Length: 128
Image (cartoon, rainbow, N blue to C red; front, side, top):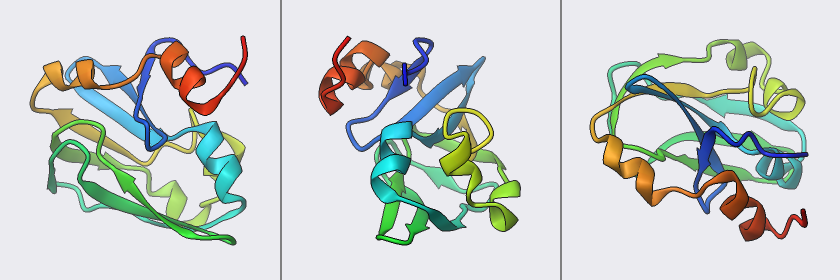
């Protein structure tokens, strides 16, 4: 699957879609594929302050429990409550419906620390 070019990515397999000064966060298709069927998502609380690369959520699959790291610093302003009853959305639509949270970004320069789609694809060994 081609990775959206307007997103940024972490080496830990999170994605960021910038929406003004807010960042929608999720895990990549590669991550959900490696994890297998997602059975539970521990969402952060709205209002929580996070720092870049700090654990802020957890995804549990049939294979493992995996921490989710904040790709940027800021405040959690929205969570995807659909995941509480339908965690499989992460498997079905990891880059759209399976988003985890929205962060009001405190420092947009942190985006420069993240990978482009092309760099992420190289990181996971996808051939163009």
